Length: 301
Image (cartoon, rainbow, N blue to C red):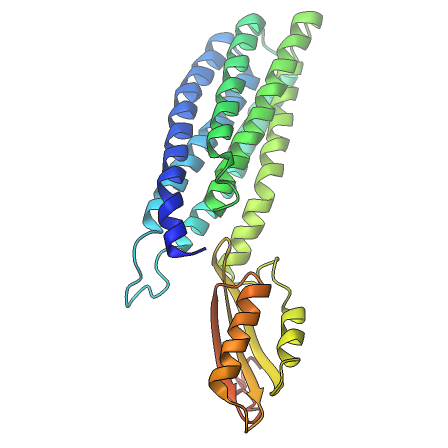
């Protein structure tokens, strides 16, 4: 992603997040108050899920702004990782909310309270409309930014949760089974956890500087070794600064008579055109210099 493209999409991303944040905050209040008035744990659970949406959108908006701060001598890569930290925190926050909801749902499963089902149904329908509207607002930007993707998945899961609340209200209206309310709450929790696993895994992989899953290092190394003049490739490292912004470094052993400048240009063109890599650092060597090994841990120094 180029700098110019970031400047172009930033206002649209920020506007989408603000719209979704306002909508979700308003309906968070509506669902929570409605849950108290109707005595519906399912509505309160959905409000809890919507609270995570508000947090996700708020932190995403904060991270989106701070990530635009320029690099400094102390933060040479800038502040792009703020997006990833926020995404990781959002994922963990979801799990904490789930524990609270499951505990309360268990209590209500043992002693089902009376629920004002008609009011519950109306509020759930309004909540679904809010989730759908918010999801549409951020959908077009979900592929551009991990943090926005996280917020989008929050919204989608919450929309499914609202569908569950609506279904529960209809079942209670038709059968009078009040126990359906806490059961729906637990099902919403399952949706919350399922929607957060990928975000936590991806953000944790980036924070641990793992190889981006979309980057095949074995194939990349094989392509480099096929270039004329390349004898070997070693000490390859690949990581992501944030989602979709990948970096690669490698030591390339070359023949002595090779023009380093021409070969370097070929390597950079190959890597950036064929693979999702945006920042390439290559160290050329005429002999295969073995890295120093730490005597205590056995890792390259």
